[in-house]
Image (cartoon, rainbow, N blue to C red):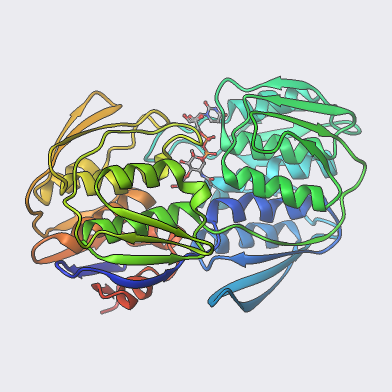
Length: 430
Ligand code: EPZ
């Protein structure tokens, strides 16, 4: 497995081009299954999660044509997905195990073809990750669902039926799945307590262009009037707010100045407010966010993760790394995932002062300096937090299990090197 070596101490200056959003691309790629016409998606990031999903779609019988395109100064992928007739309606264990978001094929395949078999993804490092909302909602829409040999087997005679559904949690995944399914249902579906993340707004925009009738974008009540057929579309996905937020923290921690080109500040209001409270200067331009921490005396600020527009759980680990080197104490509370503090013991090995209380809270008391160490990460965002710690630690940090980063951060070493970090990938074979 590849590793990343970082020698800490450099302040970062320059531009970071923010890529297309991974968590938008994944449902949007699966939405292409709702039509037998070609769907072209622009601004798809080069990530291993995208490759994994593409291999699942290939196995379902989708034709995939990839090309590279420069968009707003940044190299991107434009991919056309065309599924005139699927050759399989099964999402096997080997695909879903590698990437949970494979479950986004559930709603589209069931709505369009009346049958789907999806391996249950199971839990993962950050928590149990149940699918009860996805499944009970489809049942309320008339689907017959059974769990057999670790698979969800879902059937519907004729079309799914519109229903009034109330989610017990504002789940991003369930909102996307049920939204996609409802576009082809007979009658009207209302989703109450829907998630409002920008990724969902982007999916709604694309579905509407495909011919869907959806009301309530950016609110917690979505009304979908089902149609018989959706058609092909060309859609450009939004940029990755979590990647932008992650590099914003890199600027802050290294007392540098980064311009996050193509980042959308509207999607990051709560994290940018926290950053300002730590003492960092944040400037918004029409096409970028400038984070300037050259003269900042960083101060600890409390963080509470919550559903959008609250503070995103996917930035909790990175902001915790920031609090490790900020003056005073910060209370970090994780309310979305039950086990998302795995970065804590690794940060402590680098000299951080953190006390975890139960599963949900941690007090971080800022220290003057972190010191380098070999560290190991357990998920994507925790890995980035360790890179951040390495950037300011004294000495050489080695971050192991880099495959986590490759799932969600495009060309990470190149982006960091371009702004002055001393960072390199050690290939397994080196
Ligand atoms: C998405 O996961 C993201 N993944 C996650 O990002 C992110 O952390 C999460 O949303 C929250 O923002 C993708 O978009 C691919 P949820 P998802 O369903 O959809 C509970 C990353 O680092 N719940 O919104 O799986 C669940 O236990 C990843 O990029 C149920 O109880 O998350 C959790 O407490 C990690 N039953 C809460 O809802 C269900 O059926 C939110 O989960 C579904 C969810």
